[in-house]
Length: 226
Ligand code: DC
Image 1 (cartoon, rainbow, N blue to C red):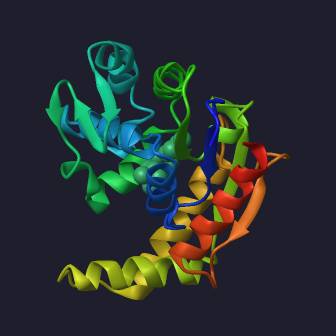
Image 2 (image 1 turned 180 degrees about the vertical axis):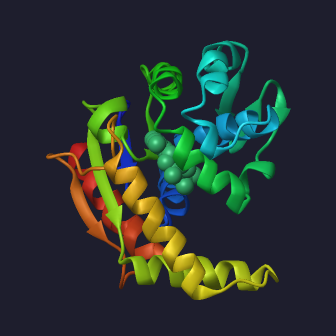
């Protein structure tokens, strides 16, 4: 690859394999990877620790404290580690409670304003792979390569189910599928920066592809821009 800056935006619904694929692409190109979902999760973790839940969003108490909480929160993502106020929260933000809360809190304009500004700063003047929901449509509108990675809800739920079962967790496939569909709906229907495919993005349906095939396909696209 040349010294040219190349920013790769990977968007798509939850469970499509974005972070696995994005990490592998970044590794292959030896460039940074930023998981923006982890940043929304870290903010959700903070709100939950402050005693707010996804149901608090319209409460006057919550509205009165949002800005103060955000102003006093420091979120960072670097080298695979998510930090909140200097504490490594990478593991703590992977619970199903945080998954649901991150989706709900990510619809709040003040939350998006803070994290989008941070993400734009992180993506300035360097090559990187960034994944999320609004990277190609909002955070890095002029990204050199935009990928919309998707798969059927059934396939995504099946993969998540198998992953959790392997970890020894007792979960129900039907429950995972219904949570996944709800999150798809919420992430795609929110007013601000909803999950949509950028007009200039390449749509990759990974329903019948393995990780290596998806990574190869994306690297081929990147090669065209190098
Ligand atoms: O990618 P993830 O599942 O870790 O993301 C958690 C939530 O954060 C997701 O449901 C929606 C939100 N999110 C977002 O609104 N914008 C992004 N760029 C990334 C994630």
